[in-house]
Image 1: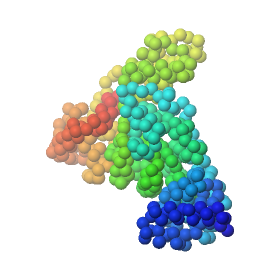
Image 2: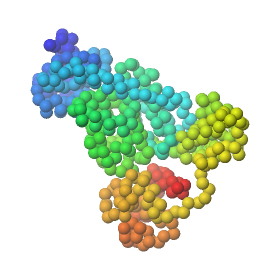
Image 3: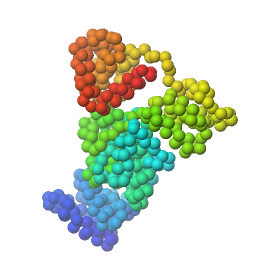
Length: 446
């Protein structure tokens, strides 16, 4: 039975929808709908058939949600349902609310705030972009795509956005932080339990979506399909999307082109490994936050020798100070070297071979080693192969024909073409140059 409140909301809603929909869409859909209930911040509308239900939930739910929420004065998600589903509303609305609460209160690390983030030349632009997005969601940089190596502070910045947004918005403002793995697992569960509509409503009712490690969607076709529609719905509803990855969009293998292009709609920013001065500042900040006693000499030693990422840098500091505390011993530079000997880079030079280069490039682009030597020409394989050929030419003494032989018998002109192509791309933009440098560092520090 329709309550007077549900009915009065609907009368106001159709007045607004008439101005938001074109005349054909309005006459096609509005006359076939019937509001049936409002429960737990969900407004249910009955439609006549499965096609209408699917089409409306996929294409019009965000608009209806915006209009109904504006009328009710609180976040109210719209769900289109069939007549035989009306009796299930009590059970389903409870489950959906639990799911929304799960996202709304997704755990953010309390230490990952803007106040605790050390800004340096390596991350200044990324930090400024994240702060701008946190202060004014969906007003400028949407989506915001952050990329960089492991342990460089991407997740810290994403959590910082989440904390800021939650502190400066109303209680019904949904800020959701999820990994791409959780998104995938939620979708699999929804398919298995035949609750895909609930899944869609859950993820499409978010105000700020922070999705971490998007590169793990590579190769997952069904998940990419669903994320594509989720992205479109949120974007069109003027909701903020922040994405992180270990590489820029164009270097994520087997990522659909339509997703790749959407990731490039907004702002792409990278985080580089910190320089020496920033590493010093990070260690000092960590020592201050954790009340750790450590000398400037030891901090300088750690900063000088641990250069790969912040996670290892802080891990080295914790190890040294733990040793000092547990053994009641003052640690100097020489003792720190002994404690950290397994973490310090090996000074012995690495022998760089074509096979080593192939292994490192294949691992970076998440392709099989044998694909390097195959005749496959898809971009996901051909591009990494060209980069590997370029690196072989730059880092080994092998001749062009010899390099070609390592790649399944390619002739010398193919290797030369790959080298020239990658050289030109490096000269024309910083993104590939950074990727090449990252690969070279990885190869040399094997």
